[in-house]
Amino acid sequence: MTRGHLLWMTVLIIAVIGSGVGVVYTKYLSRALFVELQEVRAARDRADMEWGRLQLELATRGALGRVMRIAEERLQMRAPSAQDIVVVK
Image (cartoon, rainbow, N blue to C red; front, top):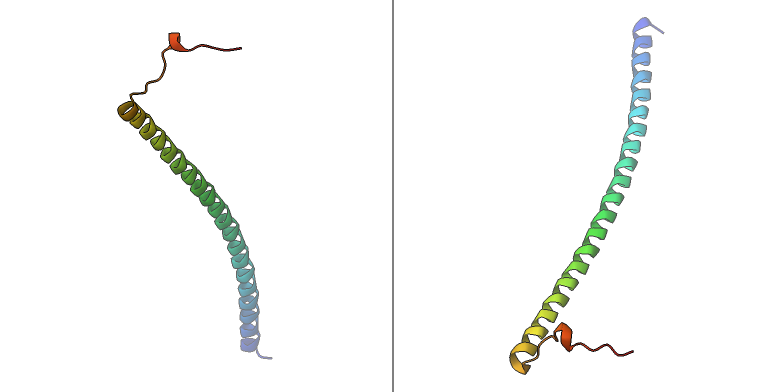
């Protein structure tokens, strides 16, 4: 083998080893990013559930306010005062 062939062989071996290390490192980064993606998706799902719960609570409170308003306007109902409340044991 000539000196030129030996030099090219060495360069190619280093390139193959570098390529292998690059593949391993890229796979590691890919897995780390996938784990992070799963965590972000779980946080998004928790936020979506909380949003739905808050929307339901808002709708419920709105419905209660409407019922109270209708009871006062149409039926002339009112909440009892403290002296009108009787506790039965």
